[in-house]
Length: 139
Ligand code: CMP
Image (spheres, rainbow, N blue to C red):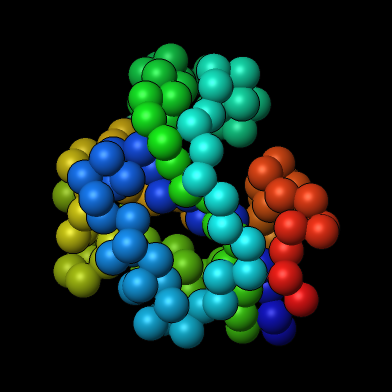
């Protein structure tokens, strides 16, 4: 089943010059990049994107971090893309991530964790639509 998922290369990874390497690893994994954009999130956009976490103690710091510099948002497509990208990223906390995963290699801590990926089909649909219109996504 072909799926789409949203990827964010977060401000920590972009500022460290890791974006090209991460995009390369995504391509090497066989996932196709079908939309791509660099942007700097404003507070409202970051709060909206992470609204599900608004009651969490880390919410305020997370929003600040996500607005701290440019990020790269992308739509990835492929068989079981959601699950495959989550496996490529590794656990949210890099200390718990498997060897070889993006977060193990490139993330500093549980907040500044280099990358985001959608966690299921419904989230993927809404997260892709949060940043991209249908016309932005190549067939
Ligand atoms: P992400 O996969 O983008 O989803 C929610 C984000 O919240 C997560 O990555 C981290 O950046 C952040 N996050 C999750 N858990 C914690 C935590 N315990 N402390 C700080 N930030 C967290």
